[in-house]
Structure formats: C-alpha cells, structure tokens
Length: 184
Image (cartoon, rainbow, N blue to C red; front, top):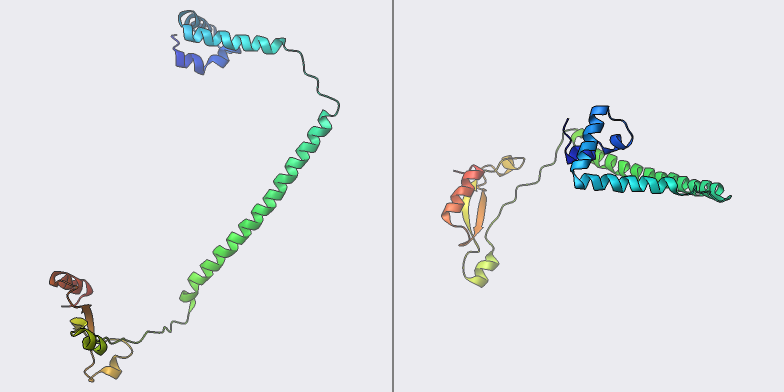
C-alpha cells in the first residue's frame, strides 16, 4: 500500500488513534520517514498531545456550577423570548399573505356581471389649431366601435379614430403598429 500526502492527512487521526491495520500502519510510518512535510506535521501534533497530557488538571471554583447554570438559564430564556417574537412576526406575515390571497381571489368569486368602461372618442383640439396654426394630431386609422355603446352609436356616423402627433410617427412604424393591432 502506497500512502501520499493527501491520504496521510485524511487518515492521520486513525493513525494517531491506532485504528489502522498493520499494513496501513507500516505504510504510514514509511511515508513519515520519506516525507519531510508530513513528518513535521506528525511531530507538531505529537508535541501538542504531550503538552496537553502533561498539563495539570484544572479544578473549577466552588461557584462555577451555579454561575454556569445561571448563564444557561439566561441563554434559554433569551432563546424562548426570541422564538415568541419570531412566531408573532410569522403570524403577521401569514395574515398579510392570506389577505393578499383573498383580495386576489375576490374578483373570481363575483357574480359574473362586469362593468365596461365607455368608449372614448378622440378629436383634434381646436385651441391647439388656433394657437399653433396647424393640426395637433393626425388620424392614423379608424376602427369600428364594439361593446355596450355600439348599438347607441350605430348609424350616427361616429367612429373611433386612432391619433398620432403630427410628424412623430414614420409610415413604417405606423404600419407595424396597425398590423399588431389587427388593423388593415
């Protein structure tokens, strides 16, 4: 078995804890002898383990456990309070979402009667013609009126004219606009 540096570092804990089989252990020891970097890593870890093992045992003071319990109590209390605040915010967000959903579904729950806006007829402004000496707009196309007002206007000669400011629309754009709107 051949051990390279990445494999050595990945399985070093098993090597230190003596959890490797004999063949793997001898391959690790051979790698330590041949690789200066991994040998240094092994020396540093071994020195740290020895230093830790030789340190005196730490004895906590008599009031350590009551202070620790008090601190834990305050941490748990703060967490419980923050959870209550978070749940209140969650409920508020849920309420807002429900209101938005209700508002979105309300139109579909209606009886089916819909209101339709009246048709607007556009014409050239006489004041503009008077003050500026020419037409303010020019008609592009006229279209038939459909909808609730169509019977009332039928035969009256009324038609809806689509207007454009004079000189603002070149013929190519006007024909493209008409084609998209379904106007011949």
